[in-house]
Image 1 (cartoon, helix red, strand yellow):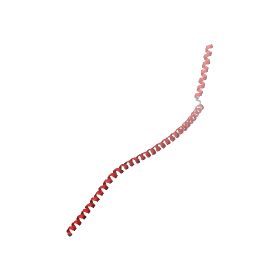
Image 2: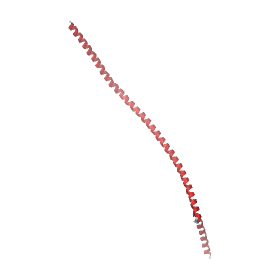
Image 3: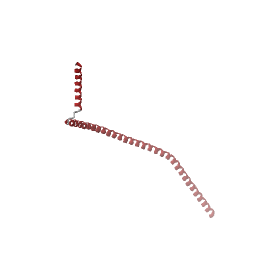
Image 4: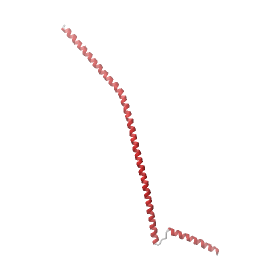
Length: 141
């Protein structure tokens, strides 16, 4: 009888153990299935979040680049304005130097007795007047 009772007890223990093993196996299966579904759901959401973050980063980068380009263009415009001002001053100084050089050369030529362009033009005008006067006198005779 003890054997039969022991066999029944062992059978009950085995059935209980198999029942617990099935229960744990089912829980493991359900946990894996739940993880798969959760990963699918959250994975899609995660990808969407990554896309949103990427779009925001792209907008910020474009804004920064636009600001840098605008700043560079402003700086170029300022430098260009300064160059134009300096160019104007240099040209004015060159004109003054050229004028001073022309006066000094004319003065030096005058000192050594070489007539200026103005002197030659004045003399040429007087010659034209004299030539015209001589032609009139010659016609009268």
